[in-house]
Length: 394
Length: 96
Image (tube, rainbow over all chains, first blue to last red; front, side):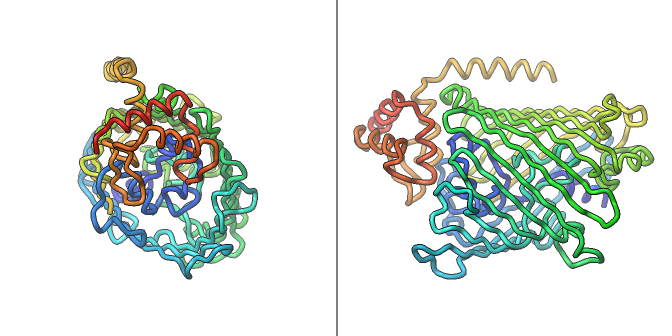
C-alpha cells in the first residue's frame, strides 16, 4: 500500500507534457499537440504524429477521437523491501473526445473530453471537461481563446515529462495525479505570451463527490508563459491560492520556471534542453506527502505548516531520434527557516524510443538527506533508487 | 556521479563540433516531414525532391505571416534567412 501511495504521489501516469518540444519549434500554443490549452494530457492527431518524430502511426492511432497510454514501472529502491519496490502497472489511461456539434464558421467549437484510468495506481476518472474554443484560436487576444469547464489538471509550474520532483511535492501539484473542478481560461495575448487563469471549487476533495464545507472552499491559479520567438528561451511563472479548509491557513504556492533550448542556441548541433524550476510554498507540506519521504514521523508532522522551497534542474540531451540522455538534480528544503535541512537528489538516465511514441526509460538516482534523523532514513527522501518505465501509447 | 557528468560534457562537446549545421537543422524538420523528407502524416507534405525555390518561398511566407499554420508559422521564425536556402536545397537534393 505504501508503494502504491508513493507512486501515486510522485510519478506521473499520463501523457507527459514536453514544453521543451514546444520551445524547440518556437510554438507557445499547447493546443498544437494537446487538447488542453494548458498542455499535457491527451494529444491531438497532430500531437501523435509530432511525437512519432517522423515515424509511422498504427492504424488505431490515426484517428482524432480516442487514445490510450499505458505505463509500467519497475522500481528498485535502496534498502529494498517488498512494500517499497517491485514492478507495477502505473496507469492504463484511455480518453475519448469529440465535437458536440459540427463546427461552423464564425462560431466557437464545443468539444467534450473524458479520460479514465482503467487500472494501476489512482485508477478511476481523470479529466472530464467541455472545451469551448474561439472561432479563430490562432489570433492573438487577451480574451480567452479556450475555456474549459469541468474536472481538469491545474496548470501550475513547469509542465514537464519529469514529475518525480520535489517542487511537485512542496506545492502539492503532483502533475497528472491531482485534479480540480472549475473553469480554466487560456489565451495568447501575443504569440510569445500565454496565460492560464483558473478558478476552482471543491479542491479539497480532488473534484470528486461533494464533501462537507465544499461550497466554501475555492482556489485560484494564474500561470504565465513567455516564449520570445527569436530567443531560445522560455520563462514562466505560476501562483496559486487555495481556501482549502474553512478556518485553516490557506495554502499558497508560487513557481518560477524556464527552459533553455540548446537545439536552437547551437543550430541543432547540440540537441539538448535545460529545464529549471524554483518553487516556494506556504502551508502546503501536508503530512501525507511528507510521510512518504520522511523517515522520522515527528519531523514530518512538524513540517505540515512550514514554508518550503524546491529547485529542479534537468538536462535532456537527444543523442538521436532513438536515444535521449537525462541528468536531473532537485532539492527540497521543507522549512526555509532551517535551510541546512534539505533533501537532494541526482539522477542520470536514458530513454530509448524503440517505436514511434513508444519508449522505455531507465534512471539511476542518488539521494541525500541532511537532517540528523534523516541521514540514514529508510524512506524515499534518503534512498537511492533505480527506475525503469515502459510507456506504450496509442 | 562526477565521472558520468564529465563524460556527458565531453560527449556533448564532440557532438557540437561534429555535425554539419544544415544537417543538424534538418533534424528539426524531420519530426514532421520525416528524416528522409517523406512525411508519415498524410496532412503534412513530403519535402524530398521538392523544388528548392518553392520550399524556400513557403518558409519565407510562413516567416513573414503571408502563410499561416499553427506549427509552421512559429517554427519558421526560428530559422535564419541564410539557413532557409540551405535547408531548401538539402531537401531538394533528397530523392523521394
